[in-house]
Image (cartoon, rainbow, N blue to C red; front, side, top):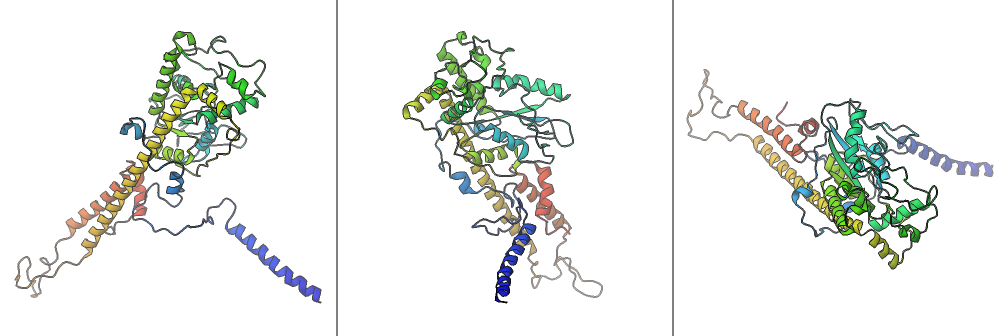
Length: 470
C-alpha cells in the first residue's frame, strides 16, 4: 500500500509538468512571437500618430546601433549632404530594379538571401525548397524587381563586376521581359575589411573554389591568357598555402574590391601595358570610389545592424528578421604575424584606401540618417502636442453673454425667450475647417519623412480618428 501511495505521489507532479508543457506548446508554438519576452520589456503607450519605423515589431534599439561605433565619427573626407542623403523613391510596382553586385567573401551570400527571403513585401519572393533561385516578381506582374544571384542567377557571368553589370543587365532584362518603358537601375553591394576578405578568399580557394567560369567581360571580350594568367596548374588550387597565395602576381584576390567596382574600360581592361602602373592604380581607385559613392546603397560586413538600418531607410523596405553580426569567421581564426598582415595590406593597398573611404562615408550616412530621423520624431511630437492643445481649446464651453449686452447679436423669439444666435456662433464653418485641419495634420505628420502619402493616409485612418468626425 505504501509503495502504491508513493508511486501516485510521484506520478502527480510528473503529469502536472507534462500537462503544462503540452499546454505551453499549444499556446506558444515553435517560431511564434506571441510568447516572446525579453528582460526589461515593458508595455509601451500607443502614440497618437504611428511611425513607419516605430511599430510593435521594430527590433531596433539605440544600443544595438551605437555599440559598434563611436557616437560621432569625424570625417576625413568632404562629403556633401547629397552624398549622405541616399533615400530613393523605389517603385517596385513600376520600372525600378535593384541590382546586387556580389563581391566574393564580403558576406554577399547572406545579404543576397536577406533580399529574397527576409523582406516584408506585398508579394514575397517565391522560394521553392531545394532551389537556389527565387522568383521575385512585382505585384500583379511577371516582371522582376531584383537582379541578383538568388533571383535571376548569374545571368551576366559568375560574380560579374561593375563593368560587366552596367553593360549586361539592361540587355538581359530586355531579352527576358518585353518592356517599353525605361527601367531605373539601383546598384547595391557589400564591402569588407580588406585583410579579412583576403584571408577568407584564401581559405575558400584552399578548399577548392576557383571561380574559373567567370567571364571578366570588358569592352566586349574576355581577357586573354597572357593578360590574365592563372595562378595554378590543374583543376583547382586546393591546399594552397598563404605564402603561395600571396606570391602569385596575377591573383585576382589582390585589390579585388577596387577592381570589381571600377570602370575597367578606363584603364584598357586587363591589358596592363596600356599605361604605367601608377596611373592605372590612380584611375582604378578614383573610379571605384566614385561608383561606390553614387550607388543607391552599400553595406559593410562589419556593421550588420547599421547595414540593415540604412538599406531600410534608403528603399523604404522593411526586413522581417534582424541581421546577425557574426565575428567568428575562418578569417578571424587565422593566426597572423604582424609581418604577414603588413604584406597582405601591401598587396591590397588600393582596397585598404577604398575601405577607409567606404567606412567613413558609411558611418557619416548612418549618423546623418539617424539625426534626421530623430528630428522628424521631435517634429511629430511637437505637432501632436499642438494638435492636442487645439482640440482641448475647441472643447472648452463658449463664455456666457456679458451683462448689459442688451440684445446685441441676439433676438427674442415669438414667446419672448432669449434667442441663442448671438450666444453660440454658427458651427458649420468651424466644423469643416477643423475636419480639414485634422486630416491635414495626419498627412503632414505621417507623410513628411517618406512622401508616400497614399499609403500612409490609409494607415493613418486607423491610427488616428478625428474627434470631430462622426
